[in-house]
Length: 406
Image (cartoon, rainbow, N blue to C red; front, side, top):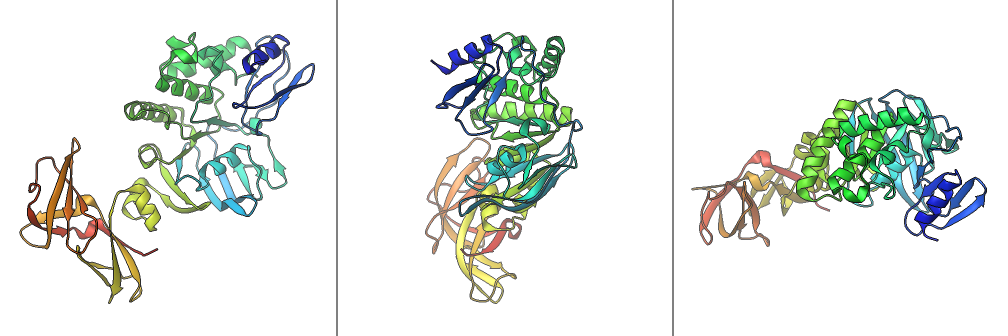
C-alpha cells in the first residue's frame, strides 16, 4: 500500500496520519495509532478535521521569544558536530548561522527544535529551560516553528489545509480565519483552494512560511529555505520573506551556506566551523574584519598571495604589506580584494591577459611576474587597458588582509 493510501486509510479511521520522508516504513500499532521507522522528529502531522482528540498543550511563550544556548555539545561517536556552543538571541532578532557543509549549523538548529538530544549544556526559550542532557520539553511544546529547504508541503492537501494543519488546538472556523490571514500576509490568499503542485517554487516557499507563522511560534527556525529556488526567484522571495518576518516581529534563526542570504536578512551573523562559532557580528564586521582566513574566504572572493613575514612586513610581487601580528619568519597569506587593485603610471608591473563582461562590472585577469595565478581585478565595464597591454598597478591598503599561512 502506498504512503498516500495509508494516510487516507488512517484519516478515514479518525486517526493521525504521519507523513514521513521517502523510504520510511509504516506499521499500525493499534486502533488509534500509527508508527513508522523514520528518524525521530522529521514528521509533519495532519489531524483529520472530524477527529475529536484533544491536542497537546503548546509551550506558552510570547509572540517573539528569546533564545539562550549555553555550552551545548552534541556528539556522534568521537565527532563533536556541535562543540561547546553558546549564543543568545533577543526577541525579534534575526540571527543567521552560516558555514560550510558539516560545520554543525543544521545540527544546532535541530538541537534547538528538540529533534536531537544534548550531550552537554542547556537550551532556554523565553527564559524557560527546554533542553538538558537529562531531557526536555517535547518539540511540539517549545513554541518553535520550522521551515525546511524542501518546504514539506502535503501534496494531497490544499494550500489552506496545509496551513491549518498546525492549528489543531483551534476550532475549524477559527483555524481557517488564522490561516487566511497568514496566506494574505504572504500574498497567497487567492490560492487557498489550490494544491501544492499547482504552485511555483516561490509560491510553495511562501505557503511554507505562512504555515510556519500561523501558530505564532516564539521562534522560527529556517534551514536553507531558499536553496531550491533559481537566482531571480530567490532574490524576490528572500526580500518578501524578510518583509513578512519583520512585520510579524518573529525571532528567527536562519541556517544558510549563502553569505548573501545572511547579509541581506540577518541582524547578526554567526560563523560556524568544526562545530564551533568562530566569529559573530554584523555582515560588515565579518566581511571587513574577518577573524580567520576561513571566515574571509567564506564572505568574499580574494586574491591570495603567499609570503613570509620579515620585520613586521610581508613582501610579495604585488607589494609589501604590514603584518604586525605575525612572527618574524612566519609564513603568511596576503588577501587582496579584486576591487582594491588600481592601474596607473607607477607601481608594480603586470599584463592584462583577459577581460570578462559581467553586467555592472568587468573581471580583468592580471598576470604578475612571480605569482603563479593571474590576479582578479574588478573594474567598471570598458574601463582600463585592453587585453595584452603591459600595465603598472598598486593595491589600496584598506583592501588587504594578512593571515598566518595554514
